[in-house]
Image (tube, rainbow, N blue to C red):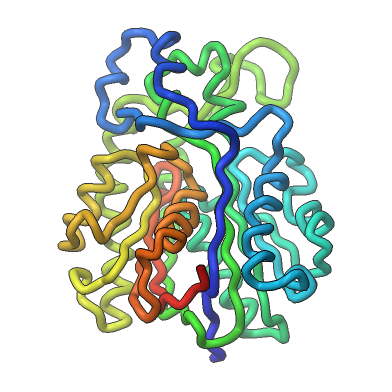
Length: 337
């Protein structure tokens, strides 16, 4: 099989940082506020009402174009996107992004089901498509855009979970070459957990029907406890599987990048891999929970800061939703800055 590389990443964060004080003025006393899952970050970014997922992806791509040349869009054979809150639920973000970039890919896919682990899933899909076809270059896009529109609704911003999410976009450029090879990828689906995350309008109406009620993802307290236990197990489990297959001890991984749900998950995950905190970078206090964008935004932050050494092993790992999907990937880093 031909080698496929994650040759570069870029990211975009919308607007000015939003302080936690924005939410405390609306917060109400409730038991859920004491749950470790909802301890809020110091800051986060919110996408504006008229800023779309494609807008964010286009701004992130501008960074890649500056690094790789004005003709980069002409090279793209495959575009795969994941958008937390689709601006156009029928069309998806991919076709409009291709139009904006001036790209003419042979394949455009919109991935919806892999949540916070979507970047790993899109890597797996792009790798397979590149390795088994004539395509040479793929762009993968993870856009998180529901913090501003959903979590600032008048009824939702009072809830304990409202300050945790942030908005942002991270993208990856993959090529069929050996410059920064993907060493291994593991993805797993756990359909038995798919029903443990609810999305409702807090009433009888469906989200597409007119009427009262503000839509949001909801968990019961008992389900949150189960999700916490699953997340603690699933992220190290898939990460250690990848380590075993590439013949590297987890404690020898140079950089470990995960999704960013909360501080306790982050601590438990690097402890499980026997890694010091400094080798498990996070953007939680600057960006909050970026869902699918958490991995590429954090990876780009580390790369721009010069903390990723070319030739080092970077391990990515994440779980989605209530634990219905998890994935991990290892890369021999070699990206441009």
